Image (cartoon, rainbow, N blue to C red; front, side, top):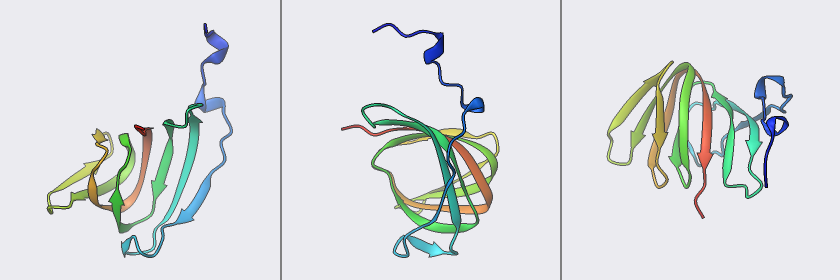
Length: 121
């Protein structure tokens, strides 16, 4: 099936609903960060998503079943693996979190990222 210029999704002109939420109590390590997500695109197979995520300060457990590309556009966070090794990410950092990663995500100051996720089946 051939696609055309009208099939390109331009997010800047798109009105996407902002979904705000708090994490489940069993995931939280410290704080009670208000988070929000704007999922701009979901593929028909539901394996590929693109959007913007943001969070207030706090720390919580993470368990990635998907691959996630992240581009930090505001703030900073510390990502720590299950062995205690950590990585601090700041504005301008771009990275991929592999499927199977477990550990914690701690927002040091309000953090905003652009994400691209792929969930392998």
